[in-house]
Image (cartoon, rainbow, N blue to C red):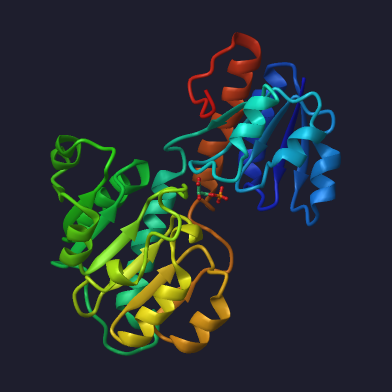
Length: 306
Ligand code: 3PG
């Protein structure tokens, strides 16, 4: 069996060593395609792969059609909006993610970006503190829960909204569960986004919603750029000079944001929430184990295209 690791943004070397160990022990062969720059390289590499480990790499119908021997794709991470699930199902390919494995890394970055934002991007001027401020966690999944845990240490007052998570689960963590997205935004000084990119959420973070936030508000995005209505966020930040936007997913209109909102806008050059040795090891090795479990024993626990 041939297992391909296809990562435009590579894992840390220790994670590759761990993945290799799992694949070797199963008697399979590991092939690496890292830092590729062209889709043609991916199309060529998948031709004889039985299993593929990816990160945010795009696996669309064309990639699936080129992967004639493919049985399983594991997205080493949480969001699988980069995989064409319908095409995979039609091709008889199992798609999995590795939920929770990189959640702490993303949550730590979210808090780091909050501190960076309220301290005026470390420019030497007087900022504000997170303690006592109201934090809104938009979607209470694995990352949201970790954000709540860490934010408690900062002494923040924590609120969350999640249409799919029972209120009792949220409140058990000492977090106030609010009834609507609107209530979350109108209540909180800082909102941290943890929603997936779906047909329902795309462009949903818009002018009207963000304009409900109190004066001096800040939005932190370690989720997906697609959930942001960029044109409306630009308009909002023009109208509200108190509003700050910190993002780990560079907007399509980054140049415009950077030029217009210097000092209250920041984007990482490349998504780095999950870019830690620990997260790479956790998610990479989980992906390798899930592949072996599926190919050898038919275990499909984390399949997302059932
Ligand atoms: C995820 O969905 O797991 C995160 O967005 C991390 O993505 P990455 O593996 O491309 O860094």
